[in-house]
Each structure stands twice: as C-alpha cells, then as structure tokens.
Image 1 (tube, one colour):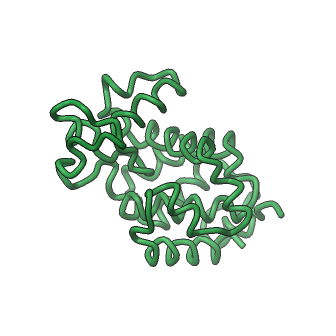
Image 2 (cartoon, rainbow, N blue to C red):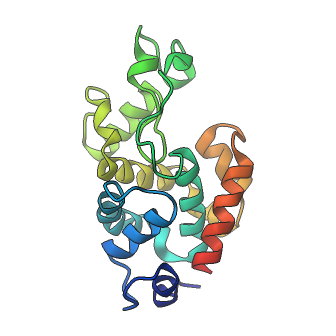
Image 3 (cartoon, one colour):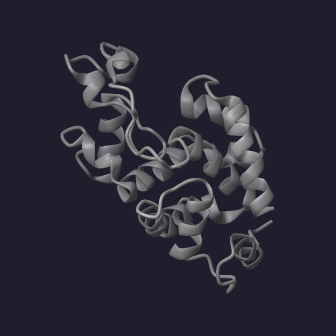
Length: 194
C-alpha cells in the first residue's frame, strides 16, 4: 500500500496536491515537534533522502521511521545529545578508544549517531569525513541524510514492513530504551499516515 499523500496533506492542513515535496515533509516534522527553524531543513533533506531510501514507499515504513527519529531527537528539538557524552568514554563497542571520544562522538542528528566507529562507518559510506568533523552530523540536513542511510544499512525498512517496533528499537538503540515513547510516536504517525 502506498501513502495517500493528498489525505496526509489534508490532515497536516497544507495544500493537498497529492505530491510529497519538501513542504509536506516540513509539515510532518513540525507536527512531531520540529521548530520553525529546523523543520524546513529537515524537510528539504527528507524530500531527497527519505524518498531515495525507500522509507516513503509505504506508510508503515515512514511511520516507524518518524517514531524512531522523533524519539531519538526529543521530537526533533535536539540535533545534538544534551548529555556531555562522558557516559560513552572508553566504550570500545562504540569505537571510542581515545581519550575524549565519548564527548566528541556523542549522539547527533535525528537518529543520534553515536560513537567513533559509527561516525567513521557512515562518513565513509556517504563520502563525508564525520570522524574528523563530527559536529556536522548535527546539521539537520546532514543528520537527516545520515538517519536515512543508517535506516537502510540496518535493514529497518523490512522490519517496518513487518510492523516490528521492538526489533527496530533494538537496532536503533541497542536495547529497548524509551520503547513506550517510541510506541506513542508510532501510534501518532500511523494515525496521520494510514
């Protein structure tokens, strides 16, 4: 089943032309908490990367994506983790092997990319040196691109097709942290998209 964009646009209160463009994505992110300064940049990037990643191919994929990134970013309010990153210091499982890595490679972007190893992996995959310049993942447009690539590299479209919020949460978070909040965002997204 494809997304009925005209119906979604009507529910968002924007021009219902049936074409999902940057304004439709902007309105989606705003509905989930993005500020007027962040929502347009997220929308511009999502218009390219969400579509290219197959996330917008059906309503379940987009609903699960929105639920996870909305939770991770505090309703799109935080493109950089509020905590100092000290909790990640010395975490070899994240590739944080040098002094200061915890703070330097703390969560950024809508998916809250964390750890030197992830910054290296996704930077190499996207052709941008995130390891040397981790702060740029906090730019909403770059962070959205990273979130979409993370989603596809982790096989999350297939799990979304199966409507498996628990498995998706484990792949995004490494555990089940915030599962109830993720489920609440998912219900909100399904109401809007289905």
